[in-house]
Image 1 (cartoon, rainbow, N blue to C red):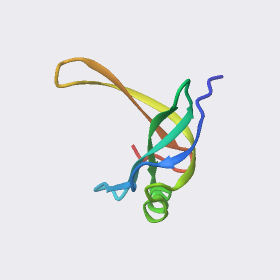
Image 2 (cartoon, rainbow, N blue to C red):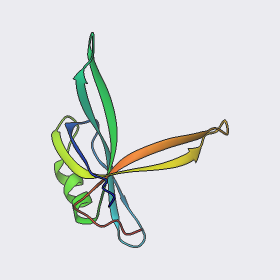
Image 3 (cartoon, rainbow, N blue to C red):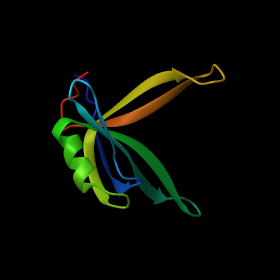
Image 4 (cartoon, one colour):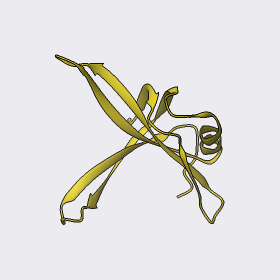
Length: 102
């Protein structure tokens, strides 16, 4: 059995960006910062988050930059080719509470 689950508790980096598709599906994208103690100063990690459907609508209405949030979902990664023809990896966290229509 495989298991892919992530829980993030941190602060929102910017207001969610909402995108409505021709099909009527709605997606919200935003970033969440988590910090931990480093040797000399805190180390911050930024997480890209995606919400779909009703969860996206709620995120767009109630989540704002600086808010403390808890996101539960799964980590997804995909490769892409940069402008310099280098294969890079990007990852995002997809919220659990919604169904991605694609």
